[in-house]
Amino acid sequence: MKRKVYMDHSATTPLASEVLEAMEPYLKETFGNPNSIHAWGREARKAVSEARNKIAELINGEAREIIITGGGSEADNLAIKGSAFALQDKGRHIITSAIEHHAVLDTCDWLQKMGFEVTVLPVDSNGIVDLEELKRSIRNDTILVTIMYANNEVGTIQPVKEIINIAKERGVRVHLDGVQAVGHIPVDVKELNVDLMTLSAHKMYGPKGVGALYVKKGTKLVPLVHGGGQEYNLRSGTENTAGIVGFGAASELAKRRLENGEHLKEAQLRDKLLSGIMKKIPHAHITGHPTQRLPFHASVCFDFIEGESLLLRLDAEGIGASSGSACTSGSLEASHVLLAMGISHERAHGSLRLTLGKDTTEEDIDYILEILPKVVEDLRALSPLGKDMNKR
Image (tube, rainbow, N blue to C red; front, side, top):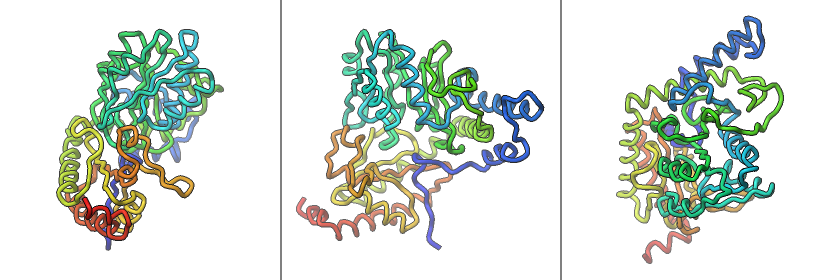
């Protein structure tokens, strides 16, 4: 039987067994609406409250500062649109970066149509935001800086403390998209002094369809969803009790794993993977910062091949991975992240993202290092692009 190796944990993680176990009662007998005053409702409300505490503890926040949403994209929208409309009397200028997730970039684009102005900061070849450009970009009418904590495609961790300090010196609110970072590296919102931060359950072994926005006490937002006034009037709608309980259990698991240093073990396996790729495959290029990167994240570009073909061949060998390029309407479109880092269209088309998980083993890494070089060699032999390799 062919070995199966899942290496796409940045896209989503499997539901941890302890998370499923925590959720199960709230999918069956404990079905009450948390807003009901009877016993069924009180039991559900207690479970939501306990889960909110666990989510807050993971980032050293307070339960009252956790607003549950339907996922990371909704939380990004609430943070950015909610800030824009709450602060529009002060100004209508927003700053973001060129490598953000589309939940941020598309939201900023939409706000521009609503009369706001957006400055998009460049990044260097490692995917790090230009801090000097940030300083120059802040104006008297700047109301928000929204930057991702760590990049989903190349794993680069931003100098978030410096970014926050620069913004705070000018009295500007800061939102961090922490979806890829929270649960995988230590995050302390009090130490960072950040105003808003996005979290997502399914990126850290929790259920899909539930996320959260950390909202520092005293930070005013305009809600996106009106109705019953749930989530402190910032996100109306009957709470997804089972999903929230799962988020809490996943947060508890992540906190324990970080305290035990399990993320450091992932980093060791990641380093073995990257080192093996560079030794075994010519014309390979690591993308993202060499050291300031997520511990589970490996991203590489291979010259003379296309990422889509690479993914299909790896899938046939039982390896689940992803590419920085996306197939849209039948044409392969290079990643906006890689292009912003100065990587050429040709090289960006050969990108591969391999992201490890808590259950990834050394044997899994060995299998990838056995299969990947053969697949790359075969694809280069079949491709007209591969002929160029022998001329270099």
